[in-house]
Length: 427
Image 1 (cartoon, rainbow, N blue to C red):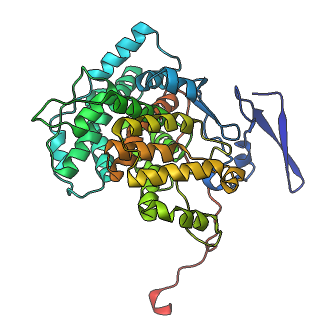
Image 2 (spheres, rainbow, N blue to C red):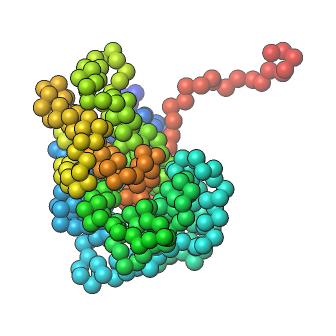
Image 3 (cartoon, rainbow, N blue to C red):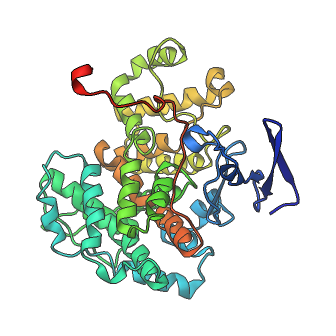
């Protein structure tokens, strides 16, 4: 807590409020004292409210900064890998060589799911949205792993975290295989995390898998760049669900449901929908003009960011990965990808976009990469959920292992005042 004090005057009464200072970032005024004096704060969307204290991730949207455990995302993306970043999020420090190997081995040993899980999939229609399936099967993990559901036990929380990180690629790939009518692929533990995912997604039992290392590297970057993003809607959902004492599998399922919303995890899916709507490079100028017209509802998706008012630090890394993937697959002339590259050029050169800081964001480039790899648009948000799992679990564990209260937001009531019941014959 800082030495600063804040005062609030209401109806001639002055209330003294505590001020907290974090390691970096703005000071935070504690308003919990208001309740005892008969007041609440009104903050739609909680955009000005710190609902928790956290040591995991820091974002400065104005400066385009994203830190995990103090490490800039650009450095992690260039020098680290996804599983090492998972370790950082869970334990707060980068692992040494022995810790890294031990953690990797734990994840590898938990990649399989109980064989009975396969019967769960048969309850879904083949044309069900993959996120609908993921909500169900991830929540169902709690029916199989009773040995790690004591949330007061640190070891239980740790093994649940490992299981979730390890099994999400398996469940995601099973979801895809089910929707296209192909047999499930068992994980191969000699492969890296991203290689294993691509093997389970695109391999088949009739022939050995041959995973392209350039594509595996790009997938690893997509997972890493989505691993955590502070107190966003889905992470806050995981924390709120966790504050009730719910098991971790149920909490992560709740996070998946929140991520499903098009305003959150569906952004890269919306990018591909937009490219399909444009349809042909000859129509780009028409749609750019529509995007500039304030009276036209059309919006270019994948440009700008609600949090980052300058640039998305993840986008620079993702752009390089996109260029590598397109070159590796020889897709520079793909019609939709040609549209994407032209839109990227316009956004970086056109004064309209530059003045409004509408730079391509991480969703723009990740959508391009996933499309190039061959992952269907309906699976994009599943990939996001897979990558975000360590962040969700880390925030859940941080909350459960500290002091916390069950979440109970207040409201500004604007309905009818108290009134007497009117019998049916008098209405």
